[in-house]
Length: 110
Length: 113
Image (cartoon, rainbow over all chains, first blue to last red; front, side):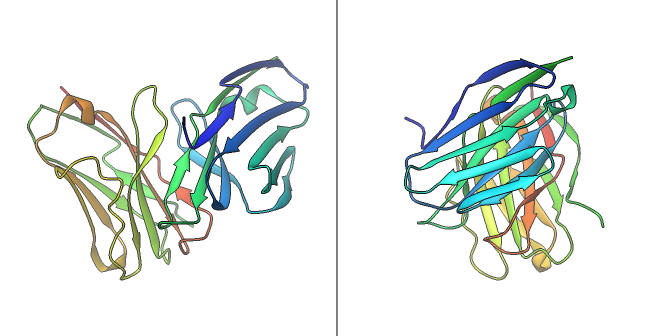
């Protein structure tokens, strides 16, 4: 079992829909990152959070440390949001390396 | 300002050859990371540099892989005697410190024939 599990693996939705991507982890962490990777493109950091909730534009990220779970929400989704969204955690023990989920491929159709 | 840059963007090599991949982090960032993303696979950690501390090499898959960071800035990832399973996108990231947001470079796509 992976230390970081994302769901769903693939998600297709219509423009305007509210999107939720989930991330669960099984280890102690000091922070959780949400990353975005466009096809053929690089990786962009969306959020880094260790508690509570953060919002940036149409994107919202929440984390529940007790339940070891985080969600990434996209409101009023748009085709340009189509990308792979990756959850990554920084472990409490052992250095600063990130452990990554397998990613969620999101496709927003017009 | 300039982001993280990597070179080359693409590298095709023959099995058994050595390759060097370069990363230029954001100026002033003390932490530098190397990751690998194989086709159809997730990202995996390779190595981490923080200032003058000894690097965390726990993610390097074999002794054919090594990395150095000169003057606390530019880093080079070297793969000796490349194998086909080394084919992947190699990503570099940097951050202000070990506990900060990481900024990723565009990656180097390595193909070993």
